[in-house]
Length: 252
Ligand code: SF4
Image (cartoon, rainbow, N blue to C red; front, top):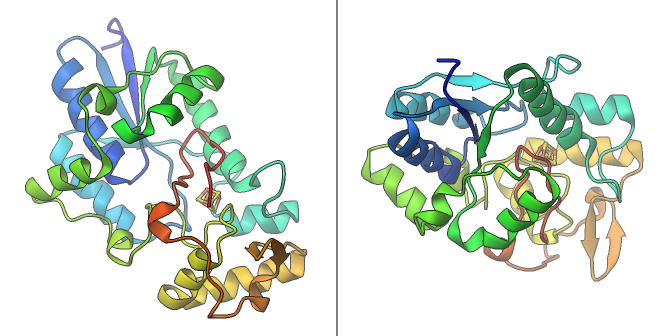
């Protein structure tokens, strides 16, 4: 219904943005056109696709896809290979190519009036920063409802939706496995333990391209130099999340 204001809900295959979509539909569907949009990334856990299907059925809407036409494979490995760059002071080229540009292409075509993201009540600062630097027209539905990340997970489970399998393997978010913005030895040893083939692929590619992805005791090293005994902060303390709007990490 084109005559009603449009809300784009950016669903990242995480628990919080799924619940944000649910609340948006409950609160605004009588007055607004609501579009739920996902940004597919080939390097995410395959179970994210099952989760997206379950969430679409739960919401009773189609989950649309935003894809950068220049990168139809949606594969970070392809972006790193072609750009000969994985991460650095300018951020990660995969977020720009596969997320930011994909989202901008979708926005240009559909011109949403408002955005909803999965910022929870403990992420008020992240929301504020986002409103200041990216988009003013954000509806903070989870913050208004006072919901935390665990609240969102509990809501999904109460409604019979199994969380993305990547959470069950102890990862702090449902982003790509082998997330290149993390410099944490704890994170990378977690990848090595739970997804050894991804670890091997990142180690090989980053050595070849010349990127030291991990930092141990203040020094950047190659992944293939990381010892299994190297440790950083706990995974739970890492508030990183590669959102669809390509924000930089808070830490990690
Ligand atoms: S999660 Fe990491 S690897 Fe995936 S697109 Fe974002 S920065 Fe790139």
